[in-house]
Image 1 (cartoon, rainbow, N blue to C red):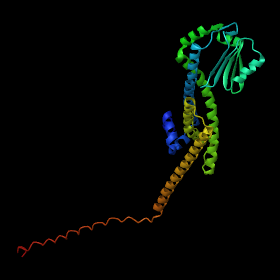
Image 2 (cartoon, one colour):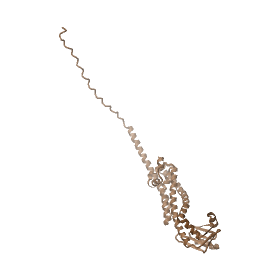
Image 3 (cartoon, rainbow, N blue to C red):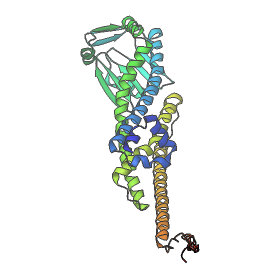
Image 4 (cartoon, rainbow, N blue to C red):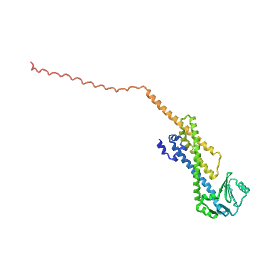
Length: 328
């Protein structure tokens, strides 16, 4: 049976996990390693989809930023760890709620605090020797000198930046973003889904005990990752909807777990029903066998021997020859 189970392909397993709940008994007999491989593959699919849609969303922003640099950004120059803009810049994009401020003159503490307040959501402030990035209320500073040493950039200006963008191209930027995102997204989703797997496995174990089924943690562990399949696919669709059209709901996490719980309960009840049906069939077979054994045995009638044909009538005694008169 294990050899046959190993022949089930990944996509066939996905289909079985979604639509063939009655076949979950196959997964109970498999080694845990097979369930672990399925886990890493399904999470990889999730990570790829999320990385693609995130790259798509970011590229919309990057494309808009590249157009701004080509057409509106004032002249600037960078050398020896210092950045200089030809004029102060206050740029704001309403679609993404992003603000960019550039002031490379001497900035007082009061002005700097005002710049930070002007950024409501996400934004960046370019100063003479550093850049301040703000997102979600948190601030992070990046000194140009450290950036220059890390990436080997000693000097840069607006013309050189535009030339570099044209050389790399939109596709090159998209591929770079995707490769940067895929590793981080995959690692994050492995941790998140693994924690969900543990929770669902414990829940399945408790349900099996309530249903009076003798399932071990290995059994519930095996079926739980397959029960999470629909939830993971819903995560993919939700990611697409969120990054493409901005759809968001705070109840998605509840729905995500609820779907997995429903699958687990349905699978355990089906497995119990199959076991009960098998036990009834076995009981019927045993009863039939007992009935057959208890029936009185009627001796077999021997076939009547055909009566032997009567012996041929005894031969008539031979009549002695009549005297011919010679004896006289």
